Image (tube, helix red, strand yellow):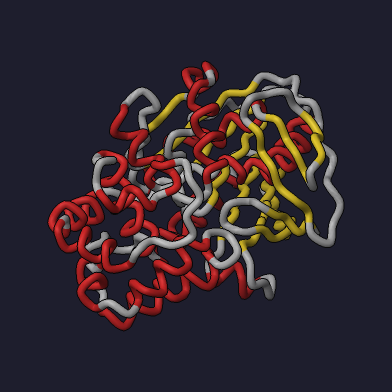
Length: 346
């Protein structure tokens, strides 16, 4: 079980580095939680390597989505569809104490499986360029896929800096570029095979799974709920092959099955940070093994310390590793934030 000082720092870091400027509600709430040892004690029951603030706040949100008559639910914008920037903290604390056993059970058995569709704002330019250049059928594998919503990047409509760039869909992906121009987005005409790997894939037809998926969305980011609802309606979700896999060897077996005549793209967005260092090393070693057998691309979008320090960045790093003819090339493509709301391309 994690120490309270460690958890205090985690909530403060979450508030300053992730919530500030993105979620005023969670920003204030996380700072308040950091000063409450009794709440931190409950949060300490999260599974090892899970991002504690995210899963603790999601657990509370999940219980409120299930019980929308609770007094606390009145202050959650996602439930009331009203704008609130602050939750009465005494009411929040009381709810957590009253439901502490349920919260402990949730955070000790579930994992963070966020599907931030806005991350497609950087996936679409990168993937469409690779697919166009290779000009052949493509297999795309998402590690830590959750409900697979980012795998349907080619079915969405894209807006950058307030202007529509491409696509026609009810799923709107909006982002802005900082100190860089909007990269070219190429038409995707080649056949795509989509595979989502997760230790517990979220079933888009299971109501409880979807409730957990929505609980992971920050409750004052109402546009994300609208986007998610529209993405879940798409028939293309039925064409994704979901694979339950937990170990690196499981990942390797699935990746090795990909058609050798296809372009192969493997990607992970905000997943590897949940791995232990040993598991990260095993994962990258697995990529090296595959790179000696076939050509493929691996895109990672992570805020891990090693990547941030490697590129002298303070943000989430977009890195593309290319294996061709048993040779490895690594490219720093840019920086973004956790939700892809903005991108600084290199």
